[in-house]
Image (cartoon, rainbow, N blue to C red; front, side, top):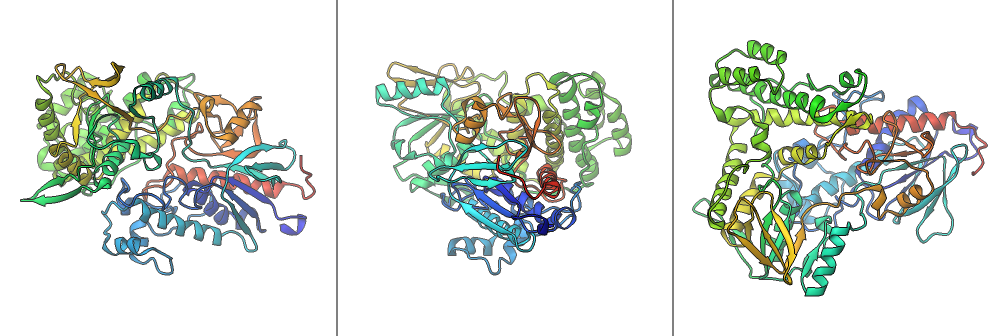
Length: 616
């Protein structure tokens, strides 16, 4: 193939994190079938190749993954339904057993030595795995290929779809020349929203501390003073990381006394008053495996079936009832097959009747009560979503005790295999998530879907159990206090005031406010110079703040509505945004299918390109 080209075909990947590595691996896997010659690949990213921004080694060793080592892989497996060849490889847990020949710093090597498959590794361990995978992916490219890394940013791309592209880098006069450009930008910064700008001005005027939404590992927390009252908005994973860095990261330590975890403050911690809409932390990750039948793919919520119908698909009316039914089916499948003594009907009878009923019907509630006698064994999405709904507390101290009991009970349940039905629901939720991504990418989903990501994260993206145990210890030590559900914050009287309708007698007066959440990226507010340039030139189309891409192969759709033959984009800033950077093994992971589709489209294009293309 290469003999017909005056140059090796050139691919520029804008971004070099795990998504880019996955595309590299798929390029190598598919090249023997689609394109036999060597290629030149240029990787442009200010952060290290393989790990990227989020998983780079250069962050606190206290920060950990929220997935078990056995649940993380960068390799395809027989479950992945893609056109390209399956090329299995080790999960993080399997790789950790024998990282021979990998250059590791002593602390990472020591952690690998004591890891077990159910460990929640440090981000530095994941960084090492991703770096190793990246090096493997590079080595699997066609013989004679070359890879160059550029630790900077792309500021613009020029060139028509008929000719090669010029990729302009920051602080470099000459552009890279590419036959194909793939944007793999990962998580991006965004311009401050008006509310955050106003709060920052207020804080500056009154000598207060304000930290807007940010990636916790990148935030300068030295601005948060010791001993001060600080309000925190958000109780998800960003808050958990924040509590780690402002507690143990400032010299505090945990110790176990008579079986109970205690926190010994260093005296340099602030007092964190934390609240959110839900008012509770995300549910703990489960610490057990299924006892019953293996999980099945979604049975009721299937994107292709919904898209086969004419017209739009309404989220609340059409999609969510089927999503809920599939998650409940996974929950009950594990309950009935793994814990048959706790149910009154055979699984075959229950599942047949279940399949015929609408999730929100009275008949479904009757079936649940008939077959599942214990309330704690039934799934209740409304209670999971808003566990504090309708509750009011006379004092803040009363609420603290209630919530600490709630968190402790959640950790106990997620650590008790007797409740493995929760894992069945979790695995079904992952399947539903993949179907939702496909439905969303179609452009036919209507209605307010903003609730869904938060609900999904609260159930599926929670912290390890010991992180919540540490949170309880921090609260017992007075470092953390909980505000309640539907928490409010006001900038008033030279301070930040905060409270909750659920604890009406309690108002906090604080000298700081931290937004414990990631910035919400939208194309209209992006801080990324390349996306700003593409938007200004009409080379991208914005849909709900995202870059519109072809759902089949992720080609960028320009302002005319046409997919660009030479430009692709994947990641959370696109309309195919829902795919994670890596996956659980044996789950037919959407990210692997997407990487394969992009790689095959790139290789087909290169194979069809003429040798004498001129630079446009």
